[in-house]
Image (tube, rainbow, N blue to C red):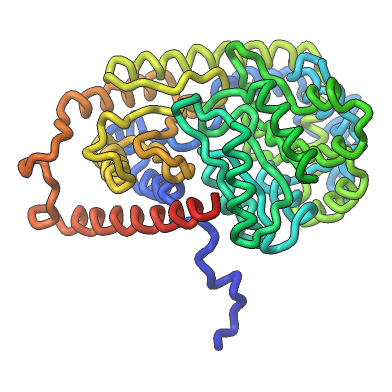
Amino acid sequence: MGILSRKATCNSHGQDSSYFLGWEEYDKNPYDEILNPKGIIQMGLAENQLCFDLLERWLEENPDAAGFKRDGKSIFRELALFQDYNGLPAFKKALAEFMSEIRGNRVTFNPDHIVLTAGATSANETLMFCLAEPGDAFLLPTPYYPGFDRDLKWRTGIEIVPIHCSSSNGFRITESALLEAYQSAQSRDLKVKGVLVTNPSNPLGTTITTQELNLLLQFIASKNLHLISDEIYSGTVFRNPGFVSVMEILNQNYKHNHQIRKQVHIVYSLSKDLGLPGFRVGAIYSNDDVVVAAATKMSSFGLVSSQTQYLLSAMLSDKKFTKNYIKENQKRLEKRQKMLVRGLQKAGIKCHKGNAGLFCWVDMRHLLGANTFESEMELWRKIVFEVRLNVSPGQSCHCSEPGWFRVCFANMSEATLDLAMQRLKAFVVDSTVTTSPTTTTTTNHLPTKRKNMVKWVFRLSFNDRVANHTNDNLG
């Protein structure tokens, strides 16, 4: 018997997913315009780096906030001392108002219902601890963010049951898909506790429709479930149809239904809309006082520093700044997304029609040697090691159809994105995806490193396929 815990020695973290392994390969050979121009370009990381100039300008114009001063006097000692884990009231107020502003002030948020967490990762996990027991299940529409396999499951023991969505209807959530997932979970003796959606969707880059939101609320009401709406991309909507928060639907159709209102919870963060993932600022919003109280106690394991809260309370309270930032951020995102779409089109590649997010859901099914996930992994290997672009394969997002990839566009310069499209176009032009023996890859004539890489890819493909098969059994 070992002396370490099962948690320390288990392999359930999800780090061996192709989503994370692509990052590892990038880290070994990162692209740099000067130092490593032939390196791998990171297109698998959903970071928003398009408005750093606006943030930096604000910091220059507001030295007191950046220098931890109030009315010209240092408050360093005040911020350095222990703070109540309820959070600074001024920051919670500013965050609530910013969330409302992003939603066109069509809804308001009560700061007393906000729980601050160290990013959305912590917020989602905390909600799992509050809403479910180990072995219980949450339903998630596919494709979904690969990190949820870690965030929701690893420490909580929660099971994820996929709601299989199809490209035939634009990956929309349907009543039949919801019921199928619910019944599949029941057939495996899993107690379903809720549904979790991302709105806008990661990786689809689309907003959830009002019809889908109404369907979800009707479903949780009929089954007595929770609904978690992860809305961390709510400020990235750059094209119609606009963003509709689940809170708007609650206010319209369930204004006096206090029970349903208590079963809906929102996750938010400043990582995507404000481009500050390193600041680790997340939040839970809930109308259930018990959930708020429990989550607040749990937040002591992952607090937002007082210095961060002070700085951002000043920034978000500057309404002239936030108004301009939201507008300019959406404008720049739309421009960059169009640039990616045009570049892909020149390479003969289409995208799922998106209106939000920091990525496109890219259709490369025509580049597959066969309609299999093994073929998807082989194409992904070529894109990473030959084209030298790190993108996220669809099976890492639990997509049920081979050939889809998530490609990010907001974490690089226009010049780097243009280079990435040039590389991809050259690859498509030079490639002939056939089944003839002349194009069949063998390991006999490959260098040792490439031989090992091929073995690694097929091992990864097998592991992901097993995971997908397990999820297929679930839903």
